[in-house]
Amino acid sequence: MAHAKQQALMFLLGALLVGGALGFSADRYIRHQSFASQYGPLRSRFYDDLGLSEKQRGTIDSLAFDEDCKMKALFAPQRPTVDSMRVRFHAQVDSLLSSAQLAKLNARRQEAKARHDAETAKEPKRQCSGN
Image 1: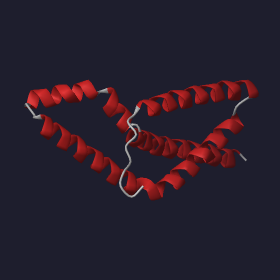
Image 2: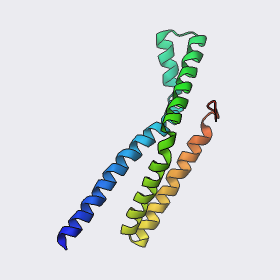
Image 3: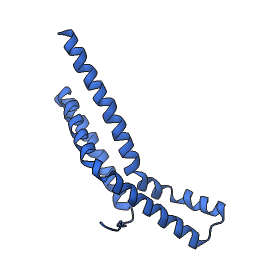
């Protein structure tokens, strides 16, 4: 019986680590645009330090946007798998919590979603070709 519990605990720990790593990677990719817009002044300073013309700046920005579109297209087939893994992980974690703990966690999740939605609303609405 103790061996089965250890195996179950190790499985959950493994799922937590894999889910965390995938979640972190996906989060870094998805939030890149938000990061870029938040640190736009730093990018402008970088351009100033290099002495780039407005045409060069616009071209580099367009190249970066095109690269982002290509990355989104590349990762699109993996999105459903990552989403289902996240849902499964949340369900496993939720099953371990008391109702008070679950209420606190759900409140944090709602706050994080509201912050994400607010940041997304600030971003320029550009469409990748083919979308």
